[in-house]
Image 1 (cartoon, rainbow, N blue to C red):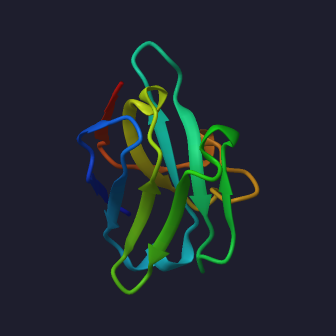
Image 2 (image 1 turned 90 degrees about the vertical axis):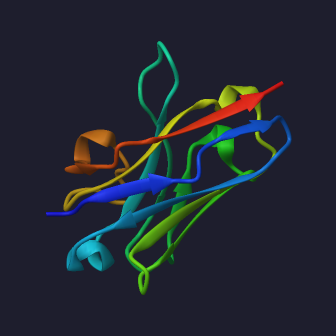
Length: 125
């Protein structure tokens, strides 16, 4: 069993930066790929970024490439999402997720067994 708790979301102006954190419980964290997803009001959940167990492989959705960076610290059981040059369209609830079948080659929400409660990111124009 893995429990995930996100933090770091808040209201920020366009062009600003935020760093989200996701702390995981459980020894298996270090063997799992981790992902960030987001869901805006009235829209489907969207993949944002994923990182493999070692941190050596990362993938991003096109709309955040060059602006967002996913990283992890396995000594702290934590995965991060550094978000720069934020845009109003980045406004959403951001959730971290993982699972045995979740990989950077197949970063689908359907592959995730464990989800955090989410943290709200609001970008004002």
